[in-house]
Length: 603
Image (spheres, rainbow, N blue to C red):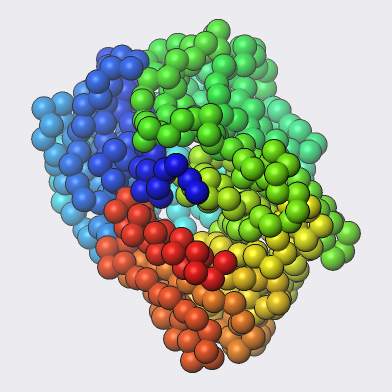
């Protein structure tokens, strides 16, 4: 048995999402209180000051470029209808938007700090418009500068403050980039194209003469590229095998950081533009964990803050000296007294699927099995399936994963076809009519586990959230003989009711991945687990948030009810103050304590 209970593992803290003030003060998010709130530090390892005091999570912080004030975002109960707030240096909070029925997506400060931009669906829930607002104006007085007809977001003001960078997402793998002249309202399209092309992580370059971004316009993987305001694209850095995930560029200095995704781990490169496509590279930052992201450049770009994590390293904010790569941990999010050396690092493995394709996965063995003490095959396994599906399981810290490992479970985390991180072609292998091929990958992964000497083939659990919840339910209906239990967290049970009831602003994007209600309804019905519920044989735990705007709680209610009618042992737990996932620490402890008790009983 473990020396530490579940609540200790779920009390491991995280600090992330940092932003530098003009005087070098660092703001960041930390979940010490049980939900993410804004905190600040003036020096490394100093005593942090809590800046916000709410029951709901703060989603981001962004300091003004000119004043000791910041903007933060927060929704209510996980409903994702974020509102914007300004926090002054004296601690006074101003509600900037105050339109609780609308979503507000932060678009950044103007260079002089007098205005900010955002995208919102306040006019029409299904589409996003672009707004500019004075920093000292509150309520609904923002100026509508562009009326959109799709999923728009703002990538920031140009260096002269006269233009906005605008991105439009047609799907997760198809975007366009525009430049909006704020005064004239003229919108210039920079990326006309055919088919699916990603243009993401866009930032203004020095002098506002071009945009730097990552794109797969000219390759199967994402390249770092320069996009001129005439629409000319030049590749700056590329990799034939791995994605360049994103770029963070300081538009005043031309200093930048970009990350290369290698089997889920990332390699951070820092440098400075010496020409339109030339980069003087600085020494590689000295950072632990294997994952670093969310770069925030400090004043004069001499240093930057970055969130650092790893499977054995809980998330904290480090500050890196740009020219030397030397780093220092600023925040002290704790491990709740659990020794770091007890955390277990996964192994990257690959298994052959039904069509001979290699499928990557992370595989972690509990300490006793890793030491060879369980080669007689008595180790239970949790097959933990990521959501998305346009996502990737990466080796970030997870207290729940470490708890399962401490209890003697192995954890297997496949990146089935359709996952990101392995090229454009791999990502499209599960589109629409090929949806169930990704479920076949799960079957192949379990076959691989059956061949492992430590694994008990009769004690394998399917667990996943969101789209991963669908994968759990599909695995239980397609291959009922493989599973000892299933844990479905905010998962899709019926693609038709999901698409009918998901937020209006999301439907078009989701139909691009799954298929449309008009053209693919019959197919969507055929692959929906709810229509094959009579095949479920394993006990099922269903976990959901009542305020979920992405996968409405009706998905949980229908699968739990119909599985129970079939005689399947079912437990259902719904939280009234949660949305798409269980985020509040008290709720997570209650939820996963129930999950653990369920697995103790059935596995």
